[in-house]
Length: 308
Image (cartoon, rainbow, N blue to C red; front, side, top):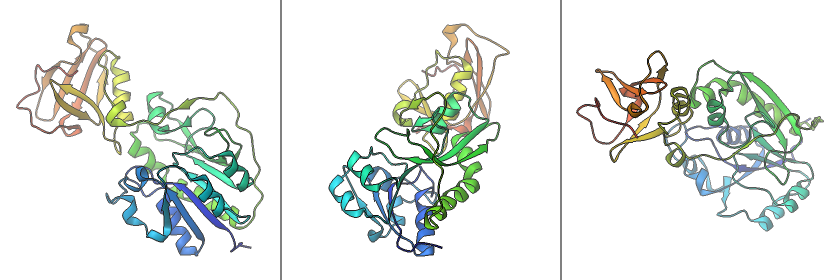
């Protein structure tokens, strides 16, 4: 039987250029007349959603409160014995007093493997490490440190063989929606959840910003450059490089090791046609479609130019 006294405090926001996971949950709560309140910050409020509008334009003012910094006293006043907390893409560490007051009812949604993919930017790190056979969705207890708590719900998903971040999120969407709502239903119906300690080697990876972290290093081997380009592709703003002072973003590529060049030729465009450019490297070469390049001012020709 559904407990109508239960209310949810949501912390965080959507992933970039998506309606997941917060918008989807809010729509569900409104449809089912479940009480909720979103606690968020400007980073998430100003993120683009799937419709390319800012997230805040999808919210009613009564749906959320905005924090510049985590306000412990305000949050403590919002928690009672019927309150459950869900952290979804949240940027905050929760104070011990808040965790304690939730009394085991504060959970984090982590859409990647635990404990091998703790932290953020999970799919980008996964592509870089070529760990692309499976991924797991998890809800776990919130503890003082990020992503260390016992797992209360998990779902393993087989991934497509070749993907960029956008393809990954699209491929898990149906399963992810079911997983989120199933967890909410367990709470509403007071179903007992078995909590399991995380097992295996722990790895923690930090948040990334493509505009800062996405610069290509042309001393890497071709395969590493290829993986790097894919890892920062859509919905992110792309890996980038320069020709002179002009910035170029790259969203996809192919590589070959059939022909190798001298290290001095790294980054030189040695061939160009109407659709593609070919870039030399000591470990092979990269083939990039022009439609996968973005830059402000057109080039008459790429041939003979060096990417650095």
